[in-house]
Length: 363
Image (cartoon, rainbow, N blue to C red):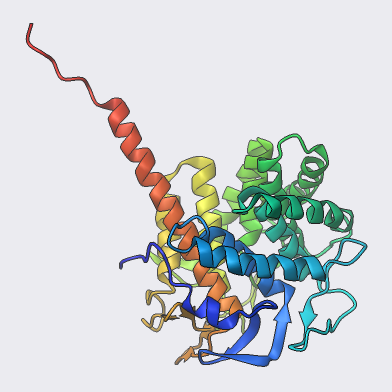
């Protein structure tokens, strides 16, 4: 099943305007009444940053990325937290957003510190992350803590001398290690129920371990990822945990509805494991997870259409609406996987040249 090396930004552009990115769509038409949210704009900033590394997309990606970063900058509160929901008329609708939206903002800022295509953006992200840092310690929800750990991991790997970021990242990573140590025998997971964005919980200690140079945290990520793989792969087909009741230890595993963000999380977790261990099977698992978008799923139906992604997989049909979350999940996975395959191919070529024996010449 062919992978698109450079996905189209067509639907990303359709959902975006000069304020941010519209949350939802009716089919492929943006639904303006749903407004904007930090959850989506943070992810959109990551996608724009990824896209900017492709010469043919750089100009458009930089244009969009500046809009998304401006939205996040406006959303940040004096105490370091963020608003989340904004109406279409640019009114903030909350006093402060959820822990998840805060975590996604931190994730985007850390990614920007390391990967933003414009130097001034990296400075803005670094300063916003510094302000957000004071609120990270108060986060209690495990997925939000995972997202914060992802952002700090990118920032630490870019700014190795920042001891405050490193100390906070280590604190978060230790929390994941302690949760795994407390898990019941045979249940190698951080909590009693698998809900949404599950593989992000594996990715966080993996990236933290790489950023901090601590193999203990990498082992936590690998152990839990292997547990999740046993639940979510049938041969080479990715089957995410359904959101109709989630999956509680000892209960029945729901198969539907399947969400695009689960495939994105698994792609990223497998790529993190590949980077940490060099195990080529992880790159293959990432590729298989991505294939869920392209039709290697229970309905044998591709979710990707014109640069957008359908909102989910029900037992008998796709959800044909293509909102921001689903489209961004697909785009981020496509860019990350293409980058990993390209780097792997370049390394293989370099190794082959290095190991090639010189030809013998006649005396």
